[in-house]
Amino acid sequence: MYILTFTLILLAGAYLAGLVGSLTGLGGGVVIIPLLTLAFHIDMRYAIGAALVSSIATSSGSASAYVREGITNIRVGMFLEIATTIGAVTGALIAVYTPVNLVAILFGATLIFSAAMTLRKKHEDAESNGSPWAEKLKLNGSYPTKDGVVHYKLRNVGGGFSIMTLAGVLSGLLGIGSGALKVLAMDTAMRIPFRVSTTTSNFMVGVTAAASAVVYLQRGYIDPALAMPVIIGVLAGAFTGTKLLMRINPKKLRLIFSIAITLVALQMIYNGLQQKF
Image (cartoon, rainbow, N blue to C red; front, side, top):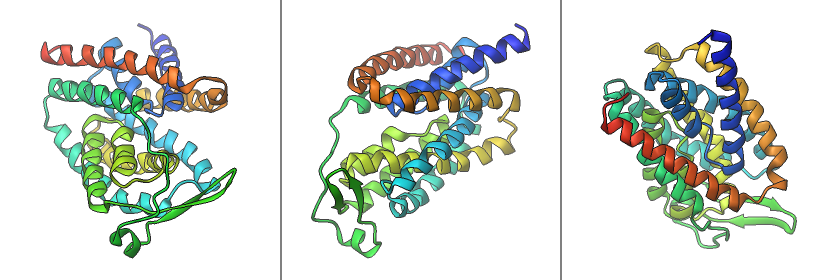
């Protein structure tokens, strides 16, 4: 295949990844890595390197808008980023010495978990009783709505911190943002309202990916020829997705996308078990 043809196909795939990722909240990595490994038979570690760079780009672009609107809880994000960064560097170091087929199986299992998390019921209410640790660390916050400012408090800070460490390990190991686990930690464990959880997770994804990307860059697993089309395509797709978000039923889209990535996940697991990577 000619380089130009390969680049154009990759650009189109990355655009699709950014589009569906922004509409469903699962991030582009869940599409980019299967595309590169299953369709182009590119080494899993180079695919992870490209996905990490795209995560940094998309997070940097979209997170700024939510921060400006005052929805993102920056203090919670920076506090939990301690856990995810430690986990991300650990996961990236583990990935270098882990057999690629095992990484593919773990990736498939994580995709299925992410699909299930996308369909679960979200925690929307603001808690009025928080934990003492949240008070001491000044993690409680507020966000604007059309009905006025909503104040909320956090629970189970330790549980959320622990889940975030696991999210960081998976992010560094598999090259994904681990947004599903991050939202699980904030939404279910810490009882943060869903809108704040998703925007704060988006803010954190880029920082976590940057920590992992340093290890992949040092090992030579970030190839500019792969990373550049992926970044451009994902950013363009994410921009289109934000424009379409108000016109599309997100529940139906999440259901369709969850079924699709579950099928892709089963293919990744099958190929991993068959030692095809």
